[in-house]
Image (cartoon, rainbow, N blue to C red; front, side, top):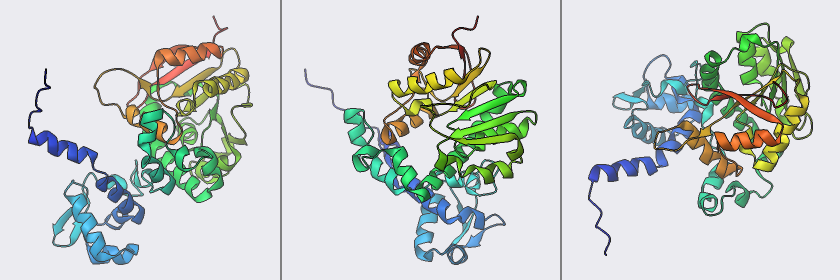
Length: 341
């Protein structure tokens, strides 16, 4: 039987064209990098002024802003004069949930996406096709890219903090270790809200080397110990709680168990492990975690897991899931030692 001919639905064709486009995302990133939204904080300005203030080429900037205005990002209030829109406001550096640094144009990432079909075909990281040393080794050897990556993670952390703060009784904790905590933005954000909480920031030495200014700005440096090391080997012991925020899903099962086992060895019988990351669920519902899942596939070969899959890994590491707490972004999985009654 011959297959039926596809129905012509012009709206779906245009919608798919819009979704498949990478011109707008790249333009958003370039304009964010220039700081155009900051230049419009006090009101609309001519494109020539914007170009002079940011070192851009005025005719090229005009073309970029007009394209974005067509998507509701910026508005051309009169010919060649542009202002902010609600979609452009988060690109300001001073926005409470600023996304200006969330979209860096990182050359190695772009090269990896150009090979994403390799990931779909093999299940392995496209990044490794371009840079065989792997994502984290590459970042360790390229401080500028690493700093921009950390800045993008800090931008995402602002949203995660907004989601996580009301979802868990952080005030019940006296001590917490953020394992793989980057530059301390998430841990510091929680500590700033709960002044009785003392924290330990733990990550690779070159990563935590960037933490001091972040912790100082949040006024928590006096209550936070910064420690460099590998979380596959040992983790600071004896805290009330341990945090793994978007860490576990970046590793395959064997390494995930190694990491969980290292945390388990550091925990007291009454300690808690809090895992904040996407959990895979079936169905068509949009979930930002599904996008993170593809990002991990492209960059490091990891990915989000189902609850059942996570529970199997926990069991091997001597842990069990006590409860799952929903947030506006990812759930918080509260995990305890298996030996606890």
